[in-house]
Figure 1 (cartoon, rainbow, N blue to C red):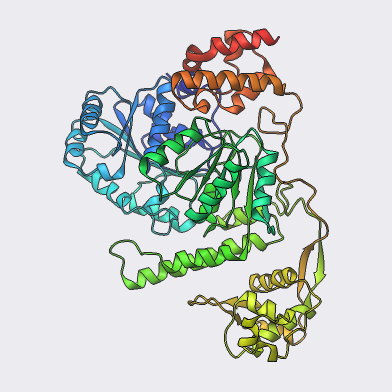
Figure 2: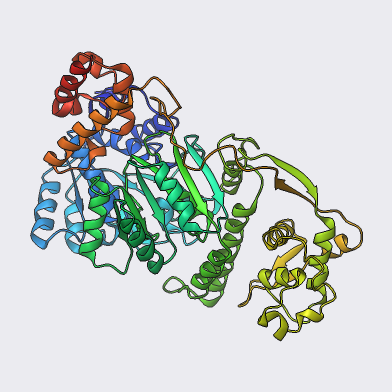
Length: 608
């Protein structure tokens, strides 16, 4: 069997996506590989296809139980024998799975990194032919990554215990240059084939809002996406509980997920979302890693995350099937305060010395600053994200809230001088809100108690809206004319270039000329390649979805594992009438057709 025959038979695809064939060929030629590919780009195919073609077994090291369960279910549905070994199994189930693994009944086995160095697993591994060890979510090995897991550092110890070194492959969606270097070094990848396909996902639309009411803004998006699945991320457990309760009270199908719930409730709520029993998941960042649900049409960040890596990973859970999807971030200044609190209370990794701990904290401060800048930039949001990860795209994507807003460049020098002058005349350090309130002429007890009404610049911008003063202050920080200290209180400070503005320099700033030319979350017709299309019969699509749900419930699997939304869209457009025509639909392979093809063909024939 060739790699193309395996791709079609088990996964229903006629060709590889960008970068996949290079990594597959690298593995099949016996070389180590590292693939940096965005969420939804098909990283798992890169090791699953070689695993089917090589002798022996492939071990996939994976960080989360939910990820393993999802992948194994998908593989078994495709006719590939796979299993997982983790703490969710009883001792008896674990021993049985280990025995089947040794007997060669599985081609792919997912294993938690904590299991690698146990006596029973080492003993079993030494009796098997292990062709490859694939490290999923490989960024977890780096302390500079957003999900550092010390157990990943033991992977190389396990490899060194084997009599014969297998091929090593590593994959992740989010990795800066430093994280990539850590992956290469800590896994000791030897002359690896490296592929970085890019971080851009053109089907995602990025929007940032600064709403007066986050609840109303979120409700507008959810209402526009009624009938579709979405995730709503919150920073705290309390906010998760409040938002979920409000949604349920307003008649929406919602559930929740955070670390304060019992294991059983988290598992139950997650399954409700995966199996489409609930349409909306309200969660902290504890939810989502390794969740392969392909039909998430929107992700709302009710609060700003602490760094761009986390944001892009979480937002990237939308539109994994390639269809148009929305990523909306609702910002408020309190989000920065909350994230800073988490950084201040952060415990460094075990066995970290004081110098390294300080360095990690400083890095987190810088990441928070870059995340905050994302919420205030008037440049293309997609280009900002790509530049953060070391790529350079076009300055206009046409599919983010900034590119879809008309801006005009204004001279804000007079206001900027007053703000900088106010900071200069303060005897003590104050935060952004206090400086803005001072020049606005606030008579709050805090301003009067600090005697800031005696500042020469007090009330000098009384006619400027307070939100505009805060925007200009953030712009001055972004451009380096002011700075925010990294100490305990995060006060506004002068920089080397502050005096340039006071002594005649000019500050230009892009400001919105009018409201965006789109309604956030506006529903679109989706075509077979994730593009907008009017060719699809939406009534037929809903009937196909209903059939998929019926089959999924009978099979006790999530609906997207039967067929993705993208596959159903293609069925609507192509309307196959025969076995061979059905196999032309992307995502329909021989194994899937044998299980479900006739039922979908029967429905499609009735509609013709």
